[in-house]
Length: 379
Ligand SMILES: Cc1ncc(COP(=O)(O)O)c(C=O)c1O
Image (cartoon, rainbow, N blue to C red; front, side, top):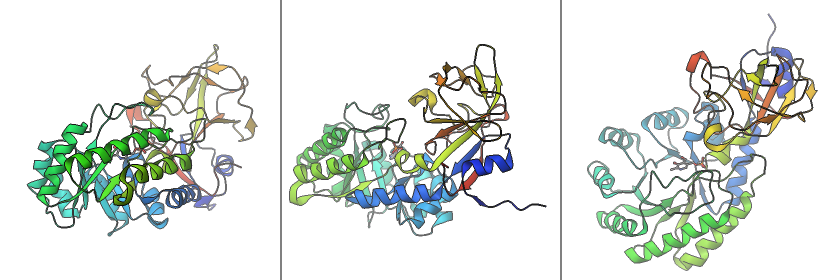
């Protein structure tokens, strides 16, 4: 029996040797650790990770190994996943709508930070959460553009509500903070800067000194244009100084997408090419390409022949379908794929670590990719 390495050198070394028939998610821990370092070195405050973007155990383990000591969790399941990896990282429970049963689990798990956006949710927390050493952040929502889609429809208090909530949290004796989320896949530092300015106004109107300001996730990943994270970090730092001055709160960020996207490449395989050029892949929107309809197709694509030799991706735009029987299992934008693309060839999507594995289904028996660890994602 031949032994297979547990860590392959490259994507192509695995494809050549394993000739996989199903989709494969290739994970490069070195890339994830480098991104974590980029955030830790560049961001002026505490770097946490939004587990929802990718809760794979090796991702959480690598982030803990990279020095992250706090994580944003959305549910009791995510709390348990994190506790299975580390007994002592801090849990920030920033899903602002919770049942009493979920709050009870959070208290038992030792959650140290919660966010709220309504008085009713605050009352639910007050009924169970001790004040000692526990932070409650008031989540602000503003009508700003700049992200791939707006999160404010669902969560967040307007400035007037936020003032009332801040006063209530402070009067109850919790560590009082604020938070916001600019919306995902946002590349414009001005969005964060505007939020920080309004947070300072809200805190002033409530006459509350903020302990911390959590400036959310939202940081764009590379979907054809490499994001300038350092410009965002610089904008956040300068806005904190400009609007809060000497009495500034400690900053916290909780990236999901930008932390994990670049560490994964999805390898799909061509099942069929129709006469009109339409391509059927062995993965689609019910699997690793789950976000395509909300946020557009990732167009960082590489094509390989079935023996894993390179094919130039310079052909005409094609309609791409996934493997299920559902006709919406189709990428929203056509992809330029080589003329000679054939059954058994590979189509690789780079930058696929966020909201892919976490959102994939088992619809029609498809959607689950094998996870393979590699030293490098490119040759
Ligand atoms: C509270 C909170 N924080 C952080 C994130 C991560 O956002 P992103 O993946 O855009 O960085 C999300 C995403 O839904 C969120 O709801």
